[in-house]
Structure formats: C-alpha cells, structure tokens
Length: 361
Ligand SMILES: Cc1cc2nc3c(=O)[nH]c(=O)nc-3n(C[C@H](O)[C@H](O)[C@H](O)COP(=O)(O)O)c2cc1C
Image (cartoon, rainbow, N blue to C red; front, side, top):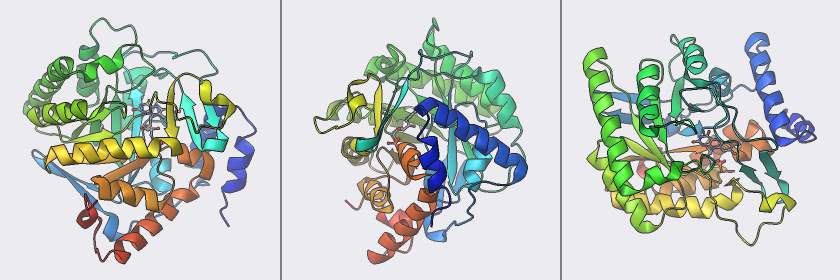
C-alpha cells in the first residue's frame, strides 16, 4: 500500500500549478513536523562518484530529482529524505521574474505527460542563495545542485550564467547550465555552436578564476534539448569536452508533439515531458554517449517512470538519472520502487554495480 497515492489523487482535483504549490507547502510543513516521505534506501550498487578536476562528488544513489520542481531551493532536504540521491534546484535567474501568465502547467493524464510554459518563474539568486546557505552543514550524501539560467530581459544572457556561478559558488554541490528551456524566447539559440563555444569559454574562465580564489571546484553540467539533431548533439559534446565541462544532462522538455497524444491539453504550447518524451530523450542520450567516448558524465532525464526505464537510460549511456513528471502521477513511493527495480535489473544481468551497465546498449 502506497501511503501517498491518495494524497496524489486528491491533489489532482486542483489545477496543475495549485497542486504543485500545495505540494511544496506540505513538504515545508514536513520539515517542521517530521511528517513526509522518507527513505534511507541507498543500495551500494547504485552509488555514483562524479569525478571533476580537483575532487570527486559522491552521490548516495543514482536517482535524482530534475530541475523545475524546487525552483527556489525551498525543499531540497525533504526531497533527499524522500529517497532521491541528488536534488537539482532551479532554474534560478539572477533577478526574480514572474514567468508567463497562468495557466502554464498542464497535466496530460491520459498520456502520463506534462506540458509546461512556466518561463523561469523564480525568486532570483538572492533568495535562492539564502536558502542554499541553510544547508551548508548538510548531512553526507545530501547532494544539492543548482540549475542556473538567464533572465528573459537580460541584455547579456551569457553574463547571467557567470553571475549564477559566482553567487552560488561554495553553496551548491554542482552546477547545471540550462540553455534548453523552450519557454524563454531565444534561449535555445545558445545551443548553436558559435554561441555555445562563447558561453562555455566564459563559464570555463569564471570557473578557473573562482577555483584560484577559493581553492574549491565543483562539477559543471550542461543541460540540452532533445530536439537537437544528431550533428548538433555531436557538436555540443565536442564543445563541452573542449571547455572541460564534466557532463551533460539529456534532456529538457520537447517542443515535439507525437500524433499519439490523447489528452485535450496536447495542443497547449510549451515543453512536453513525461512518458512520451522517453524515446526521443533516450535516443539523444545514446548519440551523446557514442560521441563522448567516456570523456563526459551523462545524466539521463525524460520519461522515467519505472526501474526498467531508468535502467534503459543507464544502458544507453547515463551514469545517473533524473525525473520529475512521473512524480506527478505516482507520488514519492516511485523513488524507492525505481531503486529496488534497478538493483533487480542489474543483478539479472550479472552486474554488481551500476557503473558496469553504463552504455551496455
Ligand atoms: C513543470 C516543469 C517545470 C520544469 N522546469 C524546469 C526548469 O526550470 N529548468 C530545467 O532545466 N528543467 C525544467 N523542467 C524539465 C525537467 O527538469 C526534465 O528535464 C524534463 O521534465 C524531463 O524529465 P521528466 O520526463 O521526468 O519530467 C521542468 C519540467 C516540468 C514538468
């Protein structure tokens, strides 16, 4: 019996965004009362080490919470307690911004999918860094990353990523440079080779300076769209390697709409995530794995709703996975189910550790 399933059903009586706001309130309340989803199931088979220049980040288990759920870093520890091995907060932009008008978040129930056009609604770096600083003395394995973005009205969008790094250096376990949200007009243009090289050069320079001054370093990932073609993915991989990034997150939401979608909301504009994103994002992951020749750590996201699908991402080349949309339908009980099933799949294939299955096809 999954204790949280009835709560999930009740939340579905609300509009998508109201349900999300209510969930965050419940989780914050849980921080005080101690009531909330809780699991300390971290099977050793699923631990991951993320190497980076000057160190290594230890992740208790390879199943993470994708960006967008906790945009303002309100509840990362509650989500670690719920069983995730790592939690990615954000996307945060330097200045607070309201995002697009509501409604902007739609459940496509029949398709186990979500469409969102939130548009980077968030409270900005000042609030975000204040929240992260609370977790400075966090327990081991509480890996909390920051997904950084650019303000819609920024005159120099690349400078916004530099500001994000500088402000959150020392507060975040890792960084994700998000250039793949479809809901900030023009943002995805940063994925083009010329712009990307320039952006990643600025990131690398900032990282070098911060490392020299503080003596610390952190993994930096780039998050890409599943809508890039094969040549564009290969270009992105090369650029990421050239500029010494540590990995790629593949992928963000898609602008594609499959003919098979059944929900009345299928025509809403925005990024599609959840079940129908699985095949497209896994194909992009596979291409990136082939091109990266072991030089980048890959994090697979898109349509993970079971241990079997998490395992498929691992076999396609991911060392870690992230999910968001399936939580909307399954609730937090899903996190432990995925971990248990992953261990079963590993054992069935004769592996003793997840790293052995990475990229096995
Ligand atoms: C409501 C919603 C908001 C999101 N916001 C962000 C965001 O701010 N930054 C980001 O990098 N990804 C964002 N994403 C994308 C997710 O992090 C993830 O990459 C994508 O949804 C695919 O995973 P899933 O199919 O498990 O949801 C958002 C997704 C959803 C559903």
